[in-house]
Length: 63
Image 1 (cartoon, helix red, strand yellow):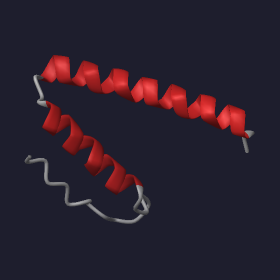
Image 2 (spheres, rainbow, N blue to C red; image 1 turned 45 degrees about the vertical axis):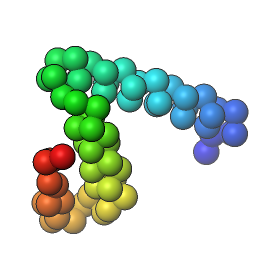
Image 3 (cartoon, rainbow, N blue to C red; image 1 turned 90 degrees about the vertical axis):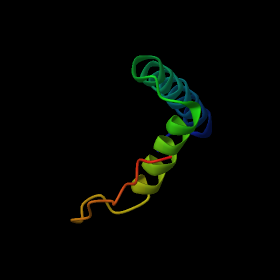
Image 4 (cartoon, one colour; image 1 turned 60 degrees about the horizontal axis):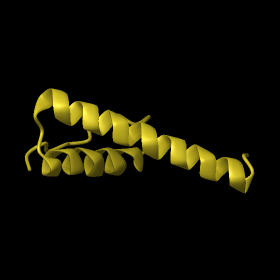
């Protein structure tokens, strides 16, 4: 496992990459801030579940 300093660096890099991805997605799709936030919430919810099961995740993309 990474030491605390490496972990902080990885978290900062992940944050920067996610921010860039979300900004690009918003620019290219015309999505609203709320739609991007909803997408991130749904991804976080799905991430917390066991992704190996046969779950369709029942994602409701409406804002």
